[in-house]
Image (cartoon, rainbow, N blue to C red; front, top):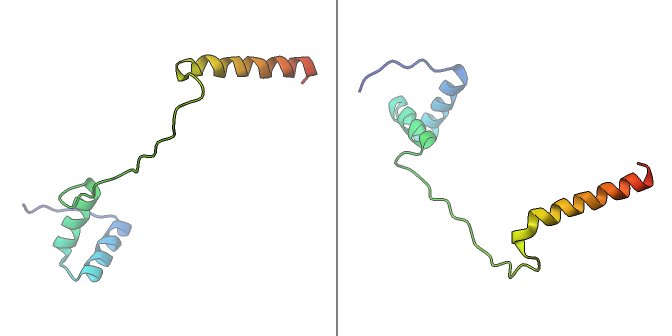
Length: 83
């Protein structure tokens, strides 16, 4: 498809650099940049290693309740100390 594209100066420079680095035409450099930017045909899979952290020492179903209790305790200490 033929179309007209107006590039900002900084993006035009990025395409020119890509042309020089890869020894390709403007058309090819622009198409590759768009594909890379929107996750096209050169998609890189992302992988995260999983590590077991063991069993929790606290029942995590009550985590919010415990956090609220700790906040309350800290507030009581501040009030008692006059801060």
